[in-house]
Image 1 (cartoon, rainbow, N blue to C red):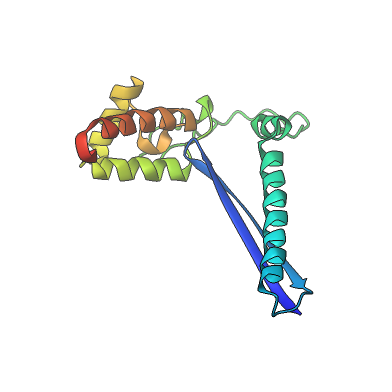
Image 2 (cartoon, helix red, strand yellow):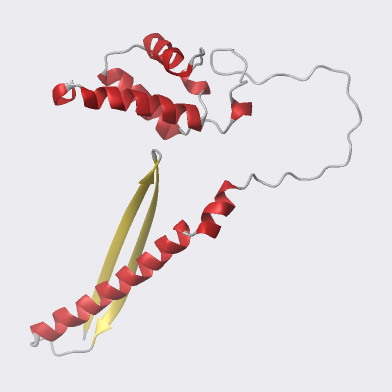
Length: 171
């Protein structure tokens, strides 16, 4: 009896975010070891089974109801009315001390988006201040790279990658 471990993985990328799927199946093959074709056929059956299970999981992840549930805002807990406090509410600030007002306009950019922006800037020989000037040109307002929303980061990334692709040999 032969023991077989079959593994498959897929990575889906969308809007600079990725999601990975993987499956590992372990099984025993009850065929004669001398019958190579039967062994290979049984292993292929395990791969086919793994492929089908992995595809079902991906389809479940990409289904309309799954996507809709990810787009819903998180439920806010209901709290009893608090006693009014006359002290001023502290304002959140970014790393440079500027008010974090961009976050109210959408979800903050992901770490991957920020990292990709900084990597692109480095390839384009842009310092952080020059990158922020470019962001201002693209979005029409001055925003620290770390204060971008997901949407704004996507717009900036699209703009910068379009300019990169337009240059011959990527330079």
